[in-house]
Structure formats: structure tokens, C-alpha cells
Length: 397
Ligand SMILES: *Cc1c(COP(=O)(O)O)cnc(C)c1O
Image (tube, rainbow, N blue to C red; front, side, top):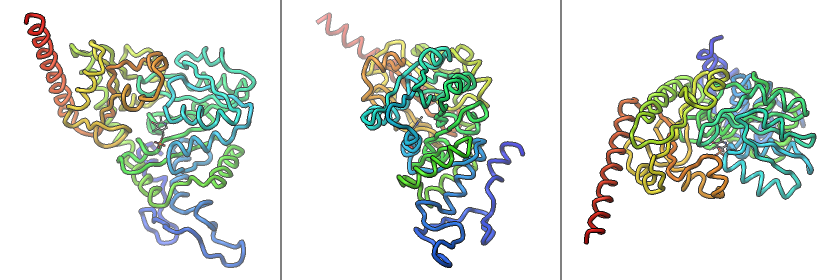
């Protein structure tokens, strides 16, 4: 089955009624024929038919053996961390998502779980830092917001040499662009809030695992802790996933056009996009991804917070908001928004300059988006001009 077909036809009609759209089983419990005798469902924290459909769909699309849907991406991440014990170590990508960093440092560290953060653009770094205590290797590729790429296949091999599991946060790519399990990862995690659901209307998380043993453990913790995705949100996520290929193709097309436009702009310093040939790991992205994704970041030649802040507040179609992966293009200023609480040294080490701007491309027409950016750059230019005129006037008077 070709991929576009798979996204639509993996989902079967409802066996009970033939409903082509998965029914929303908005129920907490299921009537039993006799104690312990039921139709496969007893209580919706443990199992729910709508969530089950979504979980099967996730497993199928990521090429794993089982999928699990959670109330948020962070709940999904929490569900994976519960595999660990005191004394275990995580080797994590250095510019990891802020919420994962917070959970590692503020929640799990006090239980004796330690985390080392390393640059994984070069797989040799993983080999250098991994140890017998490493239980999980935690990768994001591309990273946020500077879109660094790591070689999943190489890092999987290294992880397995040390009996560690490789976890890949696949939020930025979605299973349409990247299938980490096929490249050797053991666990894939998503903020389904982003590309999977795709319409900026739900908070959801997903985990997919590559073998039964892991599936049992994750299932146990999902049920024991209870941060499951509700039936309606499961339905919204299913509905979103079916158009994922179409959305992400258009979004990635837009991203490449925008990245090329930015590279040539006189006010722009660096452009971060794995689809550009000058990107450090462009060849790895080309090899392991089925497209380059829809996130683009750039910085200004004049690296000031003011430029970036004015820019992100002045666009017309790019809406100023956190999050990504929706139908409408979004813009944000990582230094004062998503990475506000990241210590300055870490921010700079990760390449998060003061003037860095992050774009999440939507499905609009690229012509309108480019025009929007063009006009906003003109505004910044005009502002600079008034600033210098004022300064000159001040020195003269
Ligand atoms: C948003 C995000 C998360 C957290 O997901 P929520 O659904 O907001 O809990 C995790 N990882 C990445 C890469 C994200 O972008």
C-alpha cells in the first residue's frame, strides 16, 4: 500500500455499525455479561474503542508493534521515563525540548535519574559519552529551534551496543517524513498536538514501541498513571492524521520557498533549514527523511532582541504564538518565548541568538507568506532609519 493510501485506509470502519468515521465512544465504563466477562473493554482508562483506533493507527504509521495515546506530549514522555529506575542515566540531545528538560531536571532527577546532554549532530559524541549506566538515549531530530539533524541509524547502533534504548521525539517530522523505528529506534514519542492532529485544536501525545515486551511495560504505566487521551480528543487526532501527508507536503513546500527567500535577504544573517544544501547535516536529512519539514528559523545581521520582537509582532499572516504544526503559519521569538527560562549559556551554546525568529509554516499560498515577510522586513528597515536619524539629531543638538 502506498503511503497516501495507508494514512486513509489503515483506519477500518466501525465493526458494529459500519460507520466510516470512527465513533466517539464517550463512555467511562462498559456493561459486563458476568464478572470479568466483557466485549474487550471494561473501563476507559484501561481501554476505549476510539482511543484504541487511534493507537492502532499510530503503531501502523510508525511501523511499530503498539501505540499509546496520552493527554499531552509531556504525559507521553512521562510514560516512557517510568521505565527507568534509580541510578539509571539518560543521554539526551543537548537542545532538547524545554518541557522534556524540565521533566528530566525538576521531576526525575530527585528520584536519582541523571541526564547528560550532548550534541548529537556527530554520532561520535554519543559513543564518547554513553556508558553502562545509560538506559535511554533521547534524540530529537530536527531539533528546536535551530533544526539540527542527527543520524538515527548510527545512534541506534551505538545505543544497542550499550543495551540502551533509543527514544526519538519525532514531533517535528511526523511519521510521514521520518520513521525512526525503521531506522533502528526502539521508541517513538510525539506531541500529537503539533503535526499529527495538525489543526491547533487539541493537546495530545503518542508513544509507539518496536517490541512486545516494551509494549507491555508502557501499557502498564499508561493504565497505572492514567494520563490517557479522551475519546473526543482521540477522534480529533484521528481526523487530523488522515490529511497529514497533504498538509505536510504543502507546509514543507512553503518552508523551502521561505528558506530560499530568507537566505537572499539583506537583513538576514543565518537561516536554519535542513532542506538548504549549506545546512551542516543536509545529506543526513536527505537520507533519513522523506522531505525536510516545515520549520524554519533565522537570525538578523544586527543581533538584537528589539529587531526580532518588532518583527514577530508585525506580520500579518504569521500569527505570534507558541506551538507549531497547524494550518496557519506561526511565528515566535524563542529567546523570550519558548526558551525564556533556558539559562543564557545553554541558549547561546544551542545557537539561540537574541534575534532568532522561528517560523512554523502553514498551508497558505507561499506568495502571500513571502509578501508578508517582505513587508515586515521593510518595516524594520524604516524603523532603523528613523532610529539613526534620531541618533544623529541627538548628537547634533
Ligand atoms: C510540544 C512538544 C512537546 C510537548 O508536547 P505537549 O503536547 O505540549 O505536551 C514535546 N516535544 C516536542 C519536540 C514538542 O515540540
